Length: 224
Image (tube, rainbow, N blue to C red; front, side, top):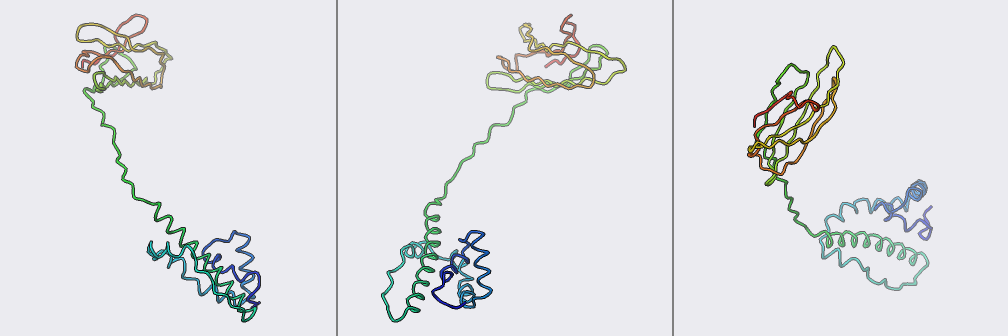
């Protein structure tokens, strides 16, 4: 099919620039099999996507509005050809204009990322067992401004006999005041992390203990 006025005569630029939807693209590719004129038009525009990336901003903006066509009524074929070329130009200019608009909008922005300060670990210890026990624990004191984050991790070992225990986490300050922060049930093979914030500086904490909740007897201790 070589009629310049056929319905596909203005599809070449849209095809090359990827503006056709999937159905239109399949339809146009089927048409190209029988239309050498459209195949030639597509070949002429094959390098257009790469060339668009080389157009400077001023030139791109000047192409957004295509020049008005000069009337020519020599023949119907000539008019159809000019109409085809104008529509191709409009499609290309529109793509260039969009690229130019993107260049105008894409103003570089400097973003300053403020990283949170690293944790200041004041003390970290493996807690010592005060009697034979399947429980082990580690404790950390982390400075949090004028306060202290206490992070304690417990592990409860496997045992030949089943056991459950109600334990408590107790902190002793330098003035001798004892504060219970938490209590929990425990059993074989379990792990637990307790994270609590204390309204006191790390330097004011003398001791951290894990005790039996019922009797208050110390199971594990860490002198800070």
